[in-house]
Amino acid sequence: MPPASTGASTIVVDASAPQSPVTTTAEPDAATHERLEPGRPGYRRMSLALFAAGVAAFALLYSTQALLPALSASFDATAGQASWTVSAATGALALFVLPLSALSERFGRRQMMTASLAIAVLVGLLVPFAPSMGALIALRAVQGAALAGLPASAMAYLAEEVRPKALIAAIGLFVAGNSIGGMSGRILTGWVAQAWGWRAALAAVGLLALACAVAFHFLIPKARNFRPGSLNPKALAKTVATHLADPLLVRLYAIGALFMTVFGAVYTVIGYRLVEEPFSLPQGVIGSIFLVYLVGTVSSAAAGRLVARLGRRGALYLAVSTTAAGLLLSLADQLAAVLVGLVLITAGFFAGHAVASSSVSRTATTGRAQASALYQSAYYLGSSAGGTLGAVAFHAGGWTATVALGLLAVLGVVSITLYGTRVARAERRALVPATR
Image (cartoon, rainbow, N blue to C red; front, side):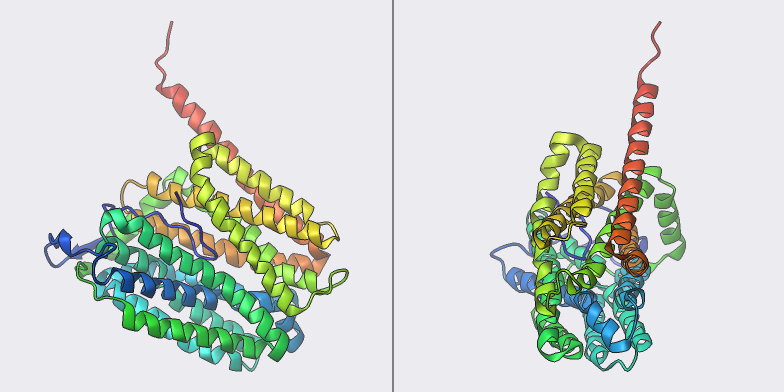
């Protein structure tokens, strides 16, 4: 059953899957009994540490999303300009996730996670003092690049240090931290900004992340099964090229990016719409809208059952239909209709994202770590594109233009899925022997 996340991509880890292309310098550890599992010393500390890391990382990553109207007012910036405070962070994460995941193979998962959190938190404490929109965007880009070292390293750490039978539960708790961090960061900034302004709101998120990073540092057990290797850039490049030459994987990456384009556009711009007439909601209430993210936990968890009943493409058709219905419903000027629309958009997005991301690990027969990292890159590039293009569309044509952008991305998912259906049918026909 694929886990749900908020802002973080869903990754299905196979403990026996090949890792990044490196040349190991020591024999694999045969002491399986040393791996962590519930009831053994260190398991609870490890779980709490990675939960705290997830909260810190995704509270920081999306910390400005609920504050975009306030940032526009403070810096006299358009929605498109303010949206770069989100897009710069997610875009930098997308660009750096693959190289940093490879570096963790050489220098260690624990070291990479610690360094990533430390740099991201340090930048987070500087962000509230940004003197201009340009400086704020630059700091957010550095923060996103730093955070890129966390997701893939955390998954690899769990695969190496936790017994296979306990792995799914451990991953689930880390992803829960992602979800709670992404949601709570947005809600916290909304209410603090309403009382004391956006700088205080970002400072509050920075302090929350600092507390979580300190907890992570003191709780995370030392890695006992990690074996460093020498980086092999040629092997890494060959693995990446192989994945990018696989038509099915490329379609899955495109589907993840397009789904996130819709989601990024909607949640980047929704604050601008709700602060205006006819809604005129205060900042704190707008931040609380992100509680709708909890719907994603349910729909993502249900994705496995949907695939079992409808097949992968059938589940994707249902997800895009739900997302499209939510987009159209959100055009109404009644708050209740907009909220129901957001629920449908969120449910459809998380279901589609869970189907696509879990299919990546199943499709890739080698280099699954790199296949998942490429999916994360596409996913966060979609977030960056959606946030920026959605804000530009809103500035040009209001919420209707943002919805039109979302529907265009949904149409892209439908087209890719239809094409995949045709390819699958052609392959099945080719396997059937010709009969006279």
